[in-house]
Length: 352
Image (cartoon, rainbow, N blue to C red; front, side, top):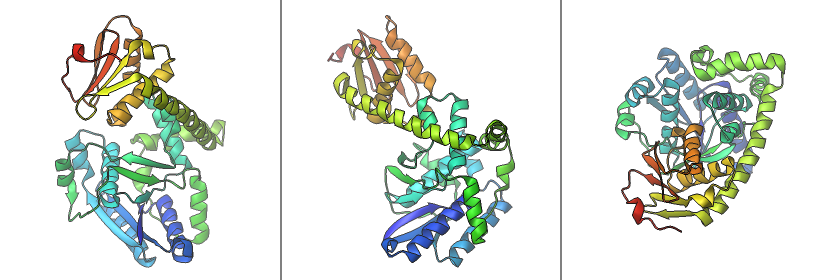
C-alpha cells in the first residue's frame, strides 16, 4: 500500500477533496493500492470552536472509514516565540507538521481558484514581481518552512506527536486550483455532505480575510469573472516564469563560478551579466541564490534583488547585507554572493 495524505481542516474545500479521493480509492480498482490518511491540525487559536472542528473531522473520518491523524499545536505561542504574525505562524506550523508526517509521500491540499486569486492579490500588495503573479502551483515540491527553530516548535506541540518519515521537501498536489469555491460548495450541497465553518474566516483583521471579504467583492462589482481572469493571468505568468527560469539555468552554467565549502560562494563577472535586461539579471541572481545557495525564498523581496541589480550596473564597488546571512560584494568587476558569512578574501577568488 502507498500512503497519500490530505490536509483536512473540516471546511468545505478539504471535506470535498477528502470525500472525492476516498470515493475514488474505494470504488476504482486502479486506485486500490493507495492508503488515504487525513491530517487535521488544531492550531489552538479558536479554543472551543477549534475543538468542535477537530471532533467533526474525527467523526467524518470514522463514518467514511478514513485513517485520521490529529495534531494539536499552540500557534499563538509559536508565533510569539518566533516573532511572526498569527497567520504566518499557523502556516509555518501546518506545513512543518505535514512534512514530518508525510515524508516523501504526496499530500493533497484543497486550495481552489478563489484561494489562488487571494494569494496573487496579496502578493501584489506586498510588492511582488512576476513570480508572485504565478500564485500557488497545482503540483510542487516545497521546502518545509523552512529553517524553523525545532526547540520552539516542539515546545508548542501539545500531546504526543510521533513521526518516522524524513524528507527535505514536501510533495504538494492541489487538484482544485482551477475549481471555484462555488462549484465545490454546490457539489457538497448536491451530495448532502456537511462541513465545518471556521468563524475566523469572517474576521477581516486578517490580511487574507480582508482581501476575500472586501477587495475581491469590490472587484467583482466591476467584473463578475475577476477570479477566473486572475487564474488565467496566473497560468500565463507561470509560462513566462518558466521561460525565464530555463534561460537562467542555461546561462548560469556559462557565467557563474561556484566555490567554498558546501557551495557557499557564487561569483559572477560584471561584464558577463550586466549586458542582460533587468528581468534576466533577476532570474540569474534568483537561480544563484535559491538553487545554488539554497536559502528561504520567503525572506526575499523584489527590493533585495533591485539593490543587487543597481550595484551591478554602477561603476563603483559595493557591499550589501541580504536576508539569510547572504552578503553581496562587488570588487574588481566581480560580484560575489557569500552564504553564512563564509570568510574568503575577495582578492583570492579567481576570475573566470
